[in-house]
Image 1 (cartoon, rainbow, N blue to C red):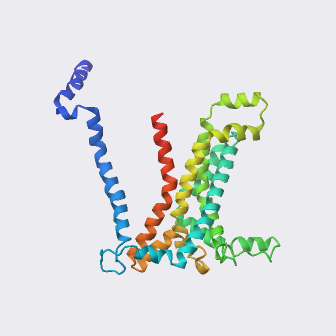
Image 2: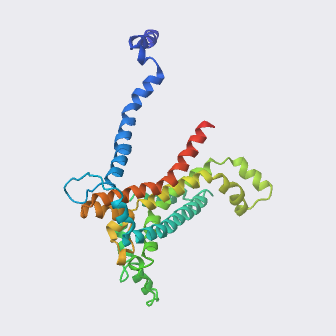
Amino acid sequence: MQSELSARAKSLPALLPKWLRDDRKIAILVLAPSIIAVAVFIYVFMGWTLYISVSNWDRPALDLSFAGLKNWKRLVNDPRFHIDLRNLVLFAVGYMSQCIIIGFLLAALLNERIRGEVFFRTVFLMPFAVSAVVSGTAWRWLQVPSAGINLLIANMGFENFRPLWYMHPKLGMLAITIMGAWQFSGFVMALYLAGLRAIPDELREAAVIDGAGTIALYRHVFIPMLRPVTFTAIVLTGAGSIGNFEIPSIIGTGPGFATDTLGFYMFEQTFRSSRYGLGAAVATFMLVLSIPLVLPYLISVLREERE
């Protein structure tokens, strides 16, 4: 019986058309729907957005007549755009540094095989599973100047210390980086922990035999070997900084657009003001900003595959 089944299995390829007997052609056939979907829903729409950014579509009625760089000139001359660029720098510096530093420290702690590692790993990762809307709503209440964290500080005896948090007209963007870092640091921790666990124990033992302490071990062995992980974390947190939309949509743009972002600016211009050309210009600008992050990552991945 078993020999009969194996004989039938061997005869199946002969029943297929000749062009389906090649594994390479079968792989292309299987991947073709995904490739077409990516080409249409990503690259075609990217080109469509670029075309809209040079059109006269500034009202609900469709108008795809060519406008040149009119929308781009309006974007560059808009004071809100200048504020959003400043906010992007503040948010990127605060958000990326917090995620990478906190994520690495948490991973280094768990890498020491502490008691209750599974529990702490779950606790650190849990914020990443929480919806951005839920976490943003919670942090909005926590950072209200008259309640939340300030109320806790006042009950500790520091009644005169009442930070404005995200309501600060200049530094409000730095306050909302705490919201984003709280949610994403656990994921960065998971990346670093996986990288640390992939380092052979022989390297650690050899460094310890040579007299390296914990700090020297991380400085000269672990951190250099974790550069690919750090690079991945920089790409992910950088892309998250550019595409930040959820936080200002929940807490608002603050006084003087102190917590406004390019993503929310694009949303308002496109879907609330019907300035589709200007909104497309903002979206294209955000895409251009992400290229210096994504392109080196793609080059490094292709280089690793060749090696």
